[in-house]
Length: 209
Image 1 (cartoon, rainbow, N blue to C red):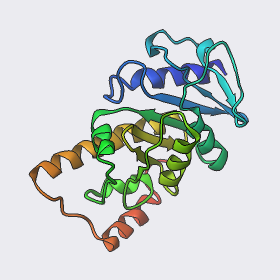
Image 2 (tube, one colour; image 1 turned 90 degrees about the vertical axis):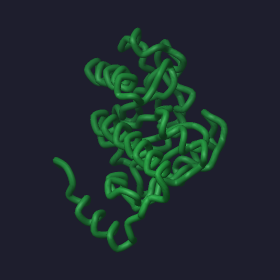
Image 3 (cartoon, rainbow, N blue to C red; image 1 turned 30 degrees about the horizontal axis):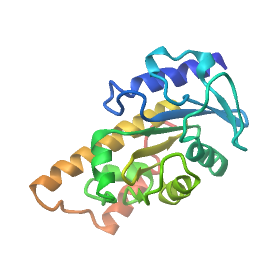
């Protein structure tokens, strides 16, 4: 248990040098038994200790000396609805936020979009942070996907473990930057449905299992 909380803190601390976060924005969680550990609200990651990690249950209750992140609802809803998810990460990274503020889906301009489970990265409808409405919108955008944008907010990813969640967040921010840069030069040429279907088929066995 202590090792799991230490890994959670290490992942939270890795977000800033990876270009995903500044200050206390964003949050990350990891499944534990019938619940999950999540970073606490409003605390700098550098000073976090294992006992600062609240343990939440799927009914929304929590135990520990700190209050959970205000965004715990979409973490909870991902764990409750998707048993394959072992870790969830939310960040306010600059390029993801830029596209999210335009409320843009990311189309198949690059084949690596398929890493997230489909032929686009959806942008969830806007709702105020920490709300059940936001979680509902996020679940719709995450259906069949491992990542999405949150309108006027940031990015959200779900992985099988903390390492994959961090990797997905870094990849999604990179794709957002690449799409943003390509759009400065003109209109990116998109891959067709047939081309993306072939990529998705190859990605079914992508990576080390």
